Length: 420
Image 1 (cartoon, rainbow, N blue to C red):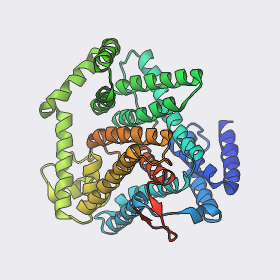
Image 2: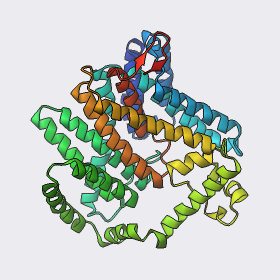
Image 3: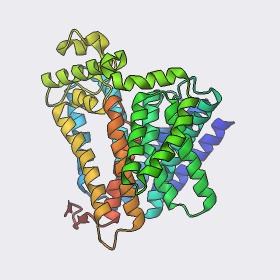
Image 4: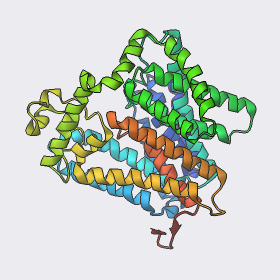
């Protein structure tokens, strides 16, 4: 029954998107984040996401939305990054392996480009944010309840067969979304909804702790550190943090405490040393293929890893870092474009927070501020996880691009080229 309901709902959304293309983009985001087809077993395997993407792109092209496409720094870097990944795929040492990930990444970047171009109003902007916060908040609440019921004995994982299935990835994704949830809390005016969002934020923190992920705990500490640093009441906030943290830590089992203690003993930890091996493998592969790398995730293949580092090749699993993942897969050029994209997003958001233009509203400054915190959390957490294909942080970047045009930070000439 749920299969039929899902198909009817998707078809209804697609019908609306033919008239209002942004509705198709929202449906695409909902499908990407929540993956509802995995809960409707009769539709699992049916390419509904491909159908949604196709109809949305068709609607964009044959509507006035396509005429609004503008080039600005972030959009240009996204296109450049996609173009270089295409070059890297052509030079891949094992194209049949890297091709799957290249295809997945291409679809993600196309979706992100549409987000950057179509979130042109406050309503559209917040619709996309609520889809993200609602989706991740739902899974975080489920994870928190699982932690409470099991008394923290088992790790919280994300939805199976998704990029966030791994407990480390899931924890860092939720930690990244916490500042966005705080942003939405500040936008709400009704007390009941504000209390509800506070509850989601609390459950999200508990879910991060429940993942047993050391990287996610570090990301959570970065989140807390931002608020402590900017607070005018540092002593009071520190006392409140201790009052909340002590019971939370006491609630978790001894094995969780012992695992978290190893954060300060990285040099003696086998898991961390495995990450170091993966980083070295990807770095040496990039040294041998400095421009295009060896192809996305080809460093996972032992025979390819052995080309540059035979000794560590048997330990080739994952790059365990967004930076080394890009470096090994698309070389130093690909990494430079990737870092430029993230740096540009930080710069654009910072400009919005500091802008004194009357066209920049309070909610725009707020989002720019909280997006900086969210991206910082992701950049720290991503240093130890292979999350470069996660669409969550890319949506945040796309919304910064959209916001920079809304706030008139980037001026656009008649040809659509951005300049200051």
